[in-house]
Amino acid sequence: MSSVVVASQKSNDSFVSNVSSSSSALGGTSKSKCRAATLQTGRPAQTLAGIRRQILLSRGSFEGLPIGASNDLVTGSWWFVWASLLSALIPLVPLVDIYTPFFVTPDETELKAFSQSVTWFLLAISGVFFTLGSYAFVRAFETPSKPPLLPNYKHFCTDELLGAWFYLFAVLPAIPYSMVYIRFRPDRLVYWGTLVCAVVFSIGSAGFVYTSYPSHHHEGGEQHGHLILPCIECVFGKKSWVCYHLQNDWLVACWFCFWSTALMTFGSWFLLICAENDRQVFVFLTGFVDSFLFLMGSAYFCAGSYPPPDHLIDIDHDDEDIINELQQHEGFQPVLSPLFEEEGGEAEGGEETEKKVQKVHEEHETSEED
Figure 1 (cartoon, rainbow, N blue to C red):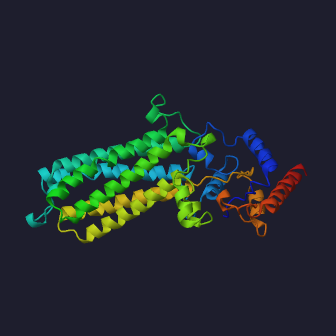
Figure 2: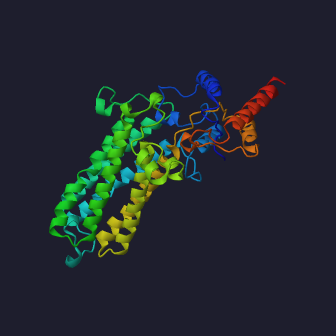
Figure 3: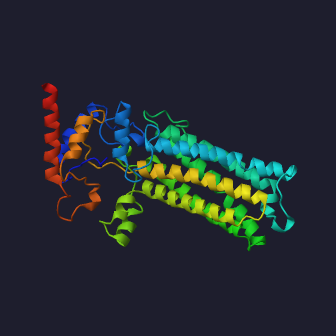
């Protein structure tokens, strides 16, 4: 399904004003709604088919992903929940093996960190923090939104912010812990891999924390600030496709975590190939599966985190006829972002797009009257 069609900002001020007012009256985006609601196009859908079309129209990448929950952010959060639960349970097996051995682990292949019960205990605690953070994300992105769990605490005042902090708490302790083992065994690749993953995920989690504070939202919460975007524009140019995919700090954090989990998934597979005993095979194999689950969740976060264009068309996603009419217009291409406007000119298709949109709505209203 093609992307929703939008008009140029400079030529459509009156049109946008009319659409915004009608959208508010029909239950459109409001300041009280959660992020997922502000990232959707048009009025909220009510039917299953309408919800499906709304999710597809709201995606900015990974359009082929299967449709799961009410929106992609909730679906991604549930992927995180199952991955987090698995990460909390996996360490229990090596922990039991330390006291009741059942893995074949020759002495010359033994990793000191793997034989320490504190290693698996800390990993299990991290898994619990990941699980709590993932469930907080589920609550944060559900539509209609739920009241936050800790509204009276500044640093946990929204479930989205609470989940981001839980993720940061889960990964930070791994940095000093892995550095201790690197000091004594700098020749062990697994310790270096653990340190790199811990640092990378700490940076990504810190990015989510930063962008989740309400003070960093634009008016209405539609999108986050643009701390990274000016740097991207200087390197790639304002019209680059890179600017579209990294158009705000939240999207930067989403893509950073996606490629981080992709790296961790590949790293787990590489370590699995190089495993030297049964315990390592179990740890790296389950680590690969767990990383893949986090990778899928990150893909859904990327797909559903693109802010809608500034000009929301009052589309009724439950009405298949009007959606089909919009798609059948020849050359009816979306303007994805004001970032791609010509300097001193209009965005592509502005005036022509407005006329086509108004024509479709007029025809639809006429058919309803008949």
